[in-house]
Length: 247
Image (cartoon, rainbow, N blue to C red; front, side, top):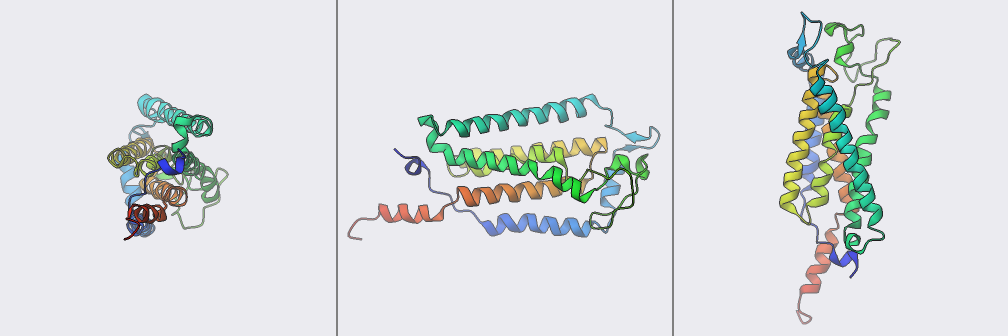
């Protein structure tokens, strides 16, 4: 039996809603650039007496929540790649070839976009700014960067992408296992939020950096799902096949 026969019909998806929410979030973030929200939230995690962020030297935040957690997601990504490659040769995996391919592409794109954007935008980390014991000058995302010998590499949030990239699981599972897909969505959002909060406590990112990351990861995963897995025509064709010949 071919994999195309075994693939489930795609469940209806409100793409307007899936696009509107991140777009509204992005517009809100742009407007928040004219407020002190990022600075105010960063100050909650800064200890002026110690001259550093409260989580700057935390073993748990750096070694466990950052390093080990990132390694766990990397292992998961490697397993996804191996699963995709195996789907070309192992009969039991062939029906899941497109899903595995979508998962691999989503994970790759939702993490690989971060480093180039950091280099292009050159946004400083909170811990590098004068307001928080550093030497660099703060500038809004859409403003020119002050002259410096050490351009920033902090927008968007890299570690947040490690968690939010798992939005891909929601889209990959939604047609076959909708309940599990919803659980995966909650898990990805929670993990990305925890990673974001941890890095904020260390002074590595502002709040907006991580929300931007969530927006990008969501749109990337949505796009991969739409172009690889979402086939409304499949539902129409199957409905037509199910009708009596004389209908």
